[in-house]
Length: 118
Image (tube, rainbow, N blue to C red):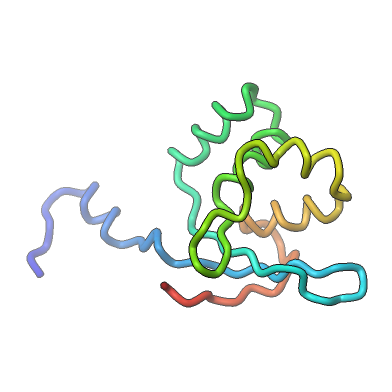
């Protein structure tokens, strides 16, 4: 492999955007409801989520980001953009916070397990 002389190419080649992290969403009894998978967030992802949210309110943007990024094991999207409102209205905030904190890699809200790179 020939080394690139451009810094941008060096940076882009150093990070794999296909690596996924798995979050096991559990109910109150500790049973796994669904495994969600997350690829690294890019600045383009953030800008798209802000656009879909229609404002810069952090809670709206983070839920849009969740809907945009979360995948099921087979790589299909776990949520549609329109699901953001339902998640905000009908899911306990503590649960939504836990998922979104994992999405953004904040704290140890859940066990992190490297997912298979399908």
